[in-house]
Length: 379
Image (cartoon, rainbow, N blue to C red; front, side, top):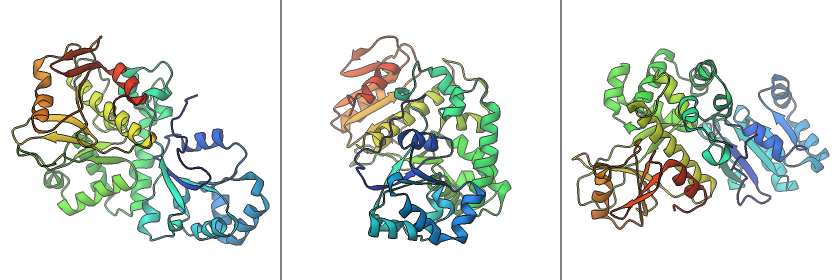
């Protein structure tokens, strides 16, 4: 059992939209937090069809079971019209709802009722270091951090099924993508872009479609919570900087499979890329779960000087290096960034066994960094 960090901080008795990619553990968490809640699972055909045919009975059932609130509607994106009844119950009877789903895209794009700002938004991400007892970095890097995948002795088939049934089939259906073959090629191209700057023109050429189509496909991945852009830090730079964003899939295990990486061993180039992706997942989840929501950027000049992550308003600058002995060449990017901006903390995250301080730069073993991150000692 995992001690999930998402506990709806600051929600009080407000209704909630609770989003998260499939298999992040939303339903399991809600059952633990609200074991006696009145629950509707819209993945069940009987429940879904009954609500379409008899919407009035939904209101009647909720009002007859006010002692079982909050009312949980799982996969709410499958039935956006139900939000009208939900708003009526919130306004007229102060009923609390938790509306969970794997993608807000359908609701937002359809112009459906978003409850007039009466519901707060929360999101669940893959597992984090702080949620897993006896955390195993090599396992996390190879399996990814969706609970079923991390737990599995051999997750390859599970991930293949996840990609086939969810990423290719369900997302294609939800986004009404006509050319499934092109979208499948795009998913592979997006994986190759993982952790790299996005060049729409090059990806479009590889997939045989326009750059506009590729931008739309990336937007679909964002809307369905399957990936996100990491913007470039551009605040009053003295040096010329790269403006293109980077892109990360939501889970390192999904990226590994799409890239056909095989088993990833420490001290290899593949490990370095996956290690950086893992650290990004941790930082992003911390930003959202702690309700700080500090922005995250990367910084890269046209002369290829780079810092992996800039947190907040250049408060923290972080380099990720999969080395067990950080050297002076690993500090160049942080030193260059500090010449332009006042930085409170400069950190290199490594597989070093011990912490060190070199030229006012903290070199931290990854475990130490993550302990400090989740103890709110980094930012």
